[in-house]
Image (cartoon, rainbow, N blue to C red):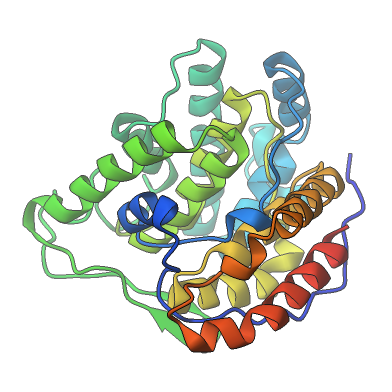
Length: 323
């Protein structure tokens, strides 16, 4: 079942300043390496129960597989993905493209088994195993972080439109990546009780760090949805038709480390996007009522202070467009 989603894209300009100096939030934002406006986030997420969300997810599995592969540039049509799910090969497609779709199907089946048996956890073991399924037919090393295998010189980059993002360099042993990953997991589990925010924040961290040589976008999406489903929250389906919008917002995130816009976009891709937008608006209004909106940026940042009214106005416009 497809729910109607807003088609008008809001005009929202984010400040590219460093992480705002809100002392109570500095710790987790420093650990993650990016930040978001907490007042723009919904305080709750619709929880339907594990059995219900798994049933809904299973019924839409071909949709998730097709969108995940298409937004990563795979030419398979939705009908061709359905054919592969039935165990029938598709003609006139390269083995590479077919292998990518089959790998996604296997990865989804793996996660489904882990979720149903309640063995899933936000761990490096599951993260790496999912990646090994997703990229098993691809050239690069799979199942290990960058630097943990034989390849030590290559650092992948992400091209989004006319921009290119380079993550931290590949280093022998993947020491920095491992340290950051475990620090991220501990921070999310200990400091983010909201399952929706925790899942999306993990997606953003995985994209920012590019832990693997390939498949990062697909793996991040799989893990995000596994987290959501384990919490009894519906999965997020990033539609292939939104690829251009996705690229633009992700590119700005890479440039500014401000995840607010991209996180709200991912919530727009959730089946309960209208409810989430309303919750976001209420959260923001409550913060304004308490007088905390004026403290959005540090008082010492005179430029941020001058821009605060405009930022609040743009945020209200964005939230209104989501609804």
